[in-house]
Length: 146
Image 1: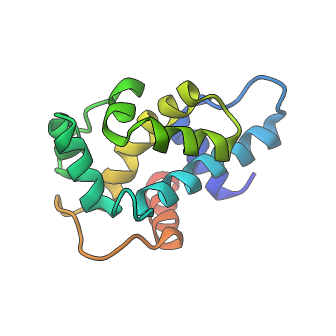
Image 2: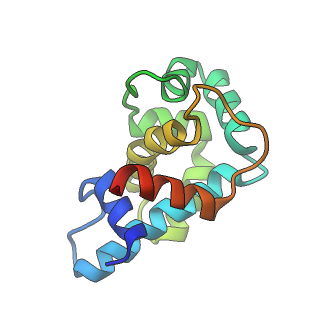
């Protein structure tokens, strides 16, 4: 299993394993879940971390993303909350890329997003510029896998 898959598996805690997929298939799906979520954040319709923050603020969920950005513990998010902030179209597009139902996709986003935002904002603020997906994956690997 590659480190990207290990990372996603650790963050998801088995949320995508099971079913008919074997361990290798589940690991690849875990890695795809992380990579596609980083792509979704960086998508122009979301607008990177700043746009993501605005979406959560507009949905009345600013306390969640503020908690993820700050240097304290990350408050958990529910599938419904991430769907409320991102919108059903973004969740459906993410689900389609993974080949899973939107409800499951929203749950995965809810598990991954707090960790991703937390690690993208190590100084407690949103850095300027876009997300370099490969840099983020490297950063997450080093922080979470050692």
